[in-house]
Image 1 (cartoon, rainbow over the protein chains, first blue to last red):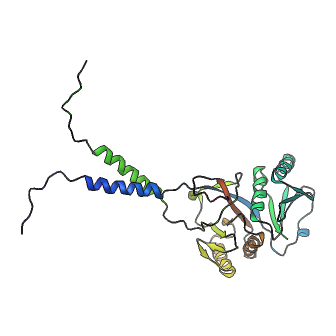
Image 2 (cartoon, rainbow over the protein chains, first blue to last red):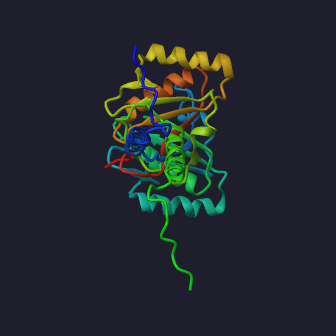
Image 3 (cartoon, one colour):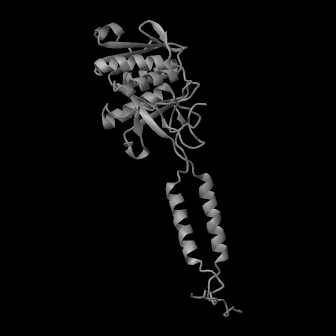
Length: 131
Length: 147
């Protein structure tokens, strides 16, 4: 069997560089920037505990969420108004209890916005009720 | 003035280029995450004030419940019935106690009815502390953000 003995001692670089470039292009194309997520904490009372079970006091903030937006103190408010109201109340105390009451038809977006507005003002005592 | 040497080697030295290219490849291999084990159809609402959530900080005890726009509940892209979800939560609770991080990743269009269903399953199994996942900072074109 004939064997080639007179091969070039220097290894051929071109195919390796080709493959390496292909790999690089693959990884550059497939890489994607990950979003940074945040978490908003809240408490969920047991389904059978009604609102009357929780102590009604005046240091309690009620936010209602309907299908069209927020109701704060019996008045429909926009998100900036809600934020303003919460930050005003947070100046007196951040310990006060926030009750978020959602109707079943409301989109999840409003709940997250309300929780975000609370988190922004360091209110962490939040309970979510459904109605 | 010194004259430029004209007797340079015609063939370029490839070694530094190959070194750099290999470093780049290693970087991309290490940072690549091949498959996302979550429902990618879910678009989240912004929550800039929330506690930042980084992949490294998530303990193995955490449970992320995905709720799609139509109310479909899934864990790591596996759709679950209410009974199966309740069982998963009980398993977590038996292993780590009721304080394990339980996170709800719901689409911004999900009706509260479906979120309530999941929350009720959690509380029925003794998990009171829930977290909702939102977007702290959207990056790139693949942003899982609404609109």
